[in-house]
Length: 229
Image (cartoon, rainbow, N blue to C red; front, side, top):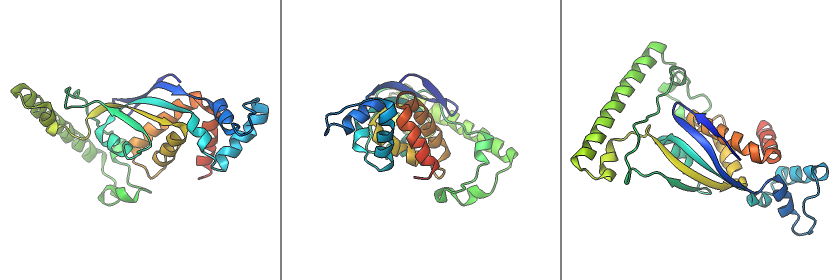
């Protein structure tokens, strides 16, 4: 699995390594019969049977490590998936780069829609002029936060405290590792229409990376999502 996909204004997902394959999933499923993988003319039906009937343990025999650069608020949602393993860069040890997520005017004008948690005043469509004004004020706030952060570092404030002024829009980096079963569970939730738009963009990119190495399994996943399963 190779490649990097740009996400949002300054983020990305990148494939680091993977293990297993669609064929290895078949081999794991056939351990009890000692038959192993034959060919896709005969084994495609078995892979479909396993997936559609929720026999998911064979899908734990494959997986991937992915590097992610995303705003901190996206990571806070991502880390709720406790079946993944994470290592994130730490502002306790190194200064976080001065990069913050700035939503577009079009993004600000999207209402909550199916997401009940996002409804309220956000459902009142903001005008383009008001959105541009709000973005300008947001960027001014980012500049102020960065100045406080840098001043703290220069003064000798411990990095773990100087970071208090860093907003949740600040970009950070992490590596996430999971088996294929748990990647698909993550994608099913975070690609859903009621997930926050920003993390949906990352989930879509992760799905595209996984499709490069596990094309048959991911085709079944896409089919299942299309059917609402």
